[in-house]
Length: 564
Image (cartoon, rainbow, N blue to C red; front, side, top):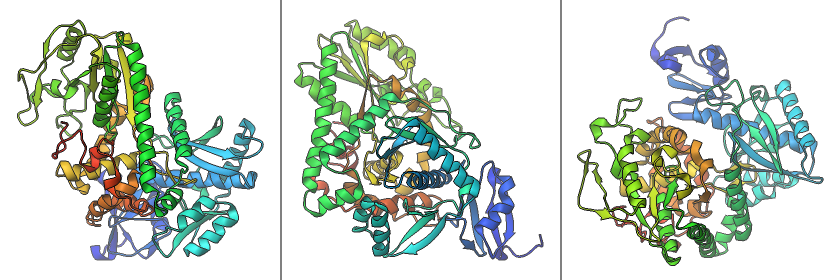
């Protein structure tokens, strides 16, 4: 390639820190095809000067380009979105009039239902997979066109996508992008790969009453991720569906209609009542197992609402005549110089060995034997444990509540027999979909909670929170998710209305991230789906709501965000 000024070139950032100048005036698809050998998986999109583009876009110099393959989180989202569209197209072709409902993630894949008569069978699932593979083999273009909301509504109405028609009544723009595979047109509200031939790594698994669309493995995108059975998690999602039936909606468009009709306050009251009833049921189960149950362990990923849940559970246990006490694993951190280091050579407080396990277990054992124990307090400023005279003893009807990321890991409480422990897993498992083909990622809901909370209580910008999020997610995979099926019960902390409440505050914070930062891509994605929601007044949210842990004015936290 001939040499030339940098301003006349496109600067491509390659994997492993390499870079390469290339000629401009071509589509990203052409440039990506030239550089594909540098990537471990198919290129599916590109980030140009920190703005996400489809491969069909052209790019002119000067520009800095980073291609996305399936090793990149945004690349995986695009691949999975396109693969979901391929499933919808194949099912619509084979079973005209059937309703495809994309429900939620499950077992390293996506659980979907296809509602038809007769009901979906294993043979039907096999037929859909065969047709999907035929469409991949045909390497059809996934065509894109821009239409007005009114034209899109006509197309969706003709295809029976009434939920999309409802959402379009609240569409924030004067256009939207429609994509087509064969005769099926849809959007899924995000970018797609350019051709079906790229979507060759997937499997369908019959999972009555629906199926699981299995995605490429994150570590090795050339193969399908191993299936992980998650029966308890599946039941929690089914419970969330039943809650949606009680509330009368399961999509953003339907909720917007209720808000527009002045029923937003009622939606909040019913959603909060469902939470309260579930927490009371958990307290009843625990109370029936006391005195054998001595320790209640609560675990969940970041921004799942563990602290508020623990407080509300404590109140329900008091109602049942128990007098629980609580301790925090944070107070048993090793002195900072002894803390294990992470991959960046910084103290890894999320590692289980950051906790002084021998001391923690010694204290637990003494407490359940009825002895008095002086509980330490960890000073995060000095990085040392301190003893400030806090002594506790467990009496009759006094279970111990422990809340923390390692609580489901038996290594944390190895001195206590399993029969004396009751384990609770809590996470915000979003059941509300944008429409029946487009889910809201659970991780995005938790990230938005954290953005709002950290800005209000921890002095962190949205940029800083998004920048830290990949490290948080890696810690969750290592320390939490692999133990979730060991819980005695799961609690879904998602509130169907919450994104309508945090919408305005989150939008203000996200709009401060401009395209000079790589995190701009995540900010625009989050802003895009927040735009679908009509806002709800935060004043309608009760003071004991789990959501108050993130938006403030909780009866369980002071004005600085510390638990009272």
